[in-house]
Length: 628
Image (cartoon, rainbow, N blue to C red; front, side):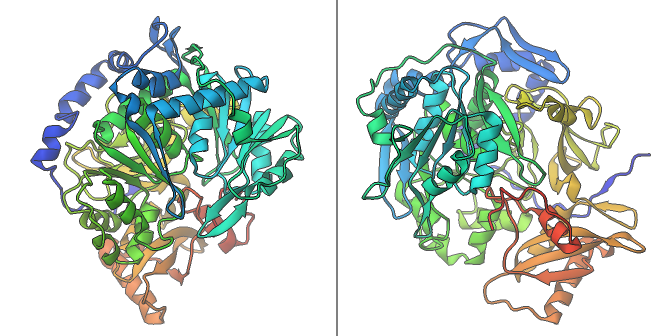
């Protein structure tokens, strides 16, 4: 009998969608739509792909040579044609595509026609440097409109973009440039963070000095006087695109042409270059954006991610633009200059869809409900959460402060999957803390190590059939790609533990590496963390397993207290008693440390392996994605 992961968390209330939410949802009967999509997934994806524009049709929807997939075989397309041209040829030409807000409140607005012109000028400037289809371009920019323009311009002419988050150090940037062999780096002189100016050009100079493949560096100069440039290798963005034609045809590309490499190390070791392609990725991000966020033409859509992460690729840039949406994107942190910043932006721009992370929600929780209460949030219609499991406490807080009747789309997916895989739809009943059910066309399950479905209970999250936006390989490391499909026979293994309840709802419990084995019981860290955060004094928690002489492992917790709470020995006892009450004796942390911060990736995931390595005096491995 395969060992099963214990499910200790008590599932809470069910929240039904309002009649208005249900009536206006694109998918009103999930059960029926899902059953139809799973009956014949290829027919389902074929129908979705036909909602988009192709230069030539595909001969075959899917070619599946386990574990290698090709989608829309023989078809030609270009993702930017669907993001831009088809809107510019319609009434959406003068619709706002992107609203950008700087850290100090500066504003830049691009209609679809203007974004189209800027992308074309940049694409022609790229051609002017002699770049050709298949060449790689590293984009190391802060969250400014040029980041979006550069991504789309590369895609338009078949270049492969590799966006690197602008908080990374020179060695981290260097390793990513070297791995993909970029010929060009696009950067800015500075980024801004809480009123401070960060010298990005210096980081790039240091990295590029050791990267012989780089022929040119393009610099967006934000400060006066402009940073000096070493010409002809270094070029000013404005001068570079100036005089370039605003007309550049989208290159017809085979559906399997690589669109981008995105390096992810997250909570594991050496960064890996995940490869996504034009055709399948376009279809997956288009339809998930439309159905999950119930996108309508009058929506203002605000996703707080950075395009340096996959959420920014899929759900700031590509997915919303494929749908002709209006995107709000803002530079800076949620609590600068005040903890009301995001709530004020929602009110100022009448945001209707707001997609954020559990980490950010917990940060805002720390400042209390008075900040959201100061802003008019009545425009909100749909909320979203991404990045890691959202504990019920944070879910309930987010739901309450946003008006108490807005559905939260708690989305589960990964850099490797390209698109959302397990998620509510707006018409589906919600359970706080659960990502609910698989998206249409996605056959997800919870299984034991041998791949047997656990029915109800805890196990490993897997996907049993290929889907269009799945990564095609790990760049230069196909063996590493195959491990995703060979860890559990016949399935894509996400590396996450999960339990499935009696209604088929998925409850993600953290990374499989983070399971703690106490006296033969396997406990997901997310459950213990969730129990700790449900205590009134706690805003955030991280849990690890430590070797124990008799129990195998014991649970150790690191806890951040809410403002105004103080550390006492009584507080530690209260927290242990609280976990005992919530989950039972087996899950009570033997040790609790009160801390002021936790190691996180810049996309907000807690890096438990770093805590564990520090605790055990080991090498934490690659920490290039670490925020602090």
